[in-house]
Image 1 (cartoon, helix red, strand yellow):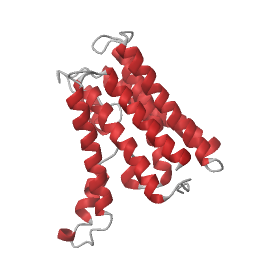
Image 2: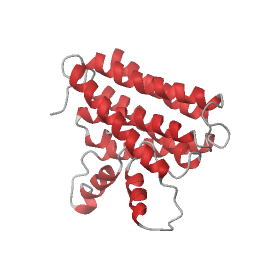
Image 3: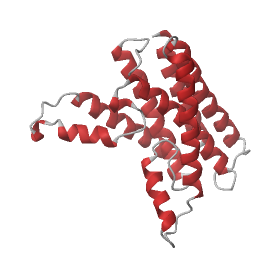
Length: 222
């Protein structure tokens, strides 16, 4: 059963779109800098893990294993926070969950920027794990609102919905604007992340943390 948002539907959508944008930003960093791995969208990692059973694929699958494990841990943390606070105190729950995510992103950005965590050495696995945990918390929190298009890390079902409900398929085009908007925002985040990553990495992660804080503020005070 979906939880009632503490703010209007329109503002809830806006807040979740901000989180979707943050997803595009950070996955651009993880794919382009940390190796062929996703820290927010797990579908690609599941395919990579299938390569474990095929020799000589040329993939280093350690990062994918770390990302999936971290994401699952984050989902557990997010689910626990929801069950403790979500139903009775939704604003408090969202403040804690998104505050935790933003704090992790900002700390990881600082550690990367200061050189404590290397983007290319073994310590990048700690960065991958931390980012995956943060987005596991985000995804498990966003899905509680029951808006399928706005789980903030999944586009496959959204794109399927665009096709199935389109007028070409004999549908009404219902929810088309929302679905196109979600796809556009995710791609926009990836474009911004991919554009900035060759110039700077840590600030992109920090920017994602700031975007999450903006979403938190909307949920908290909207």
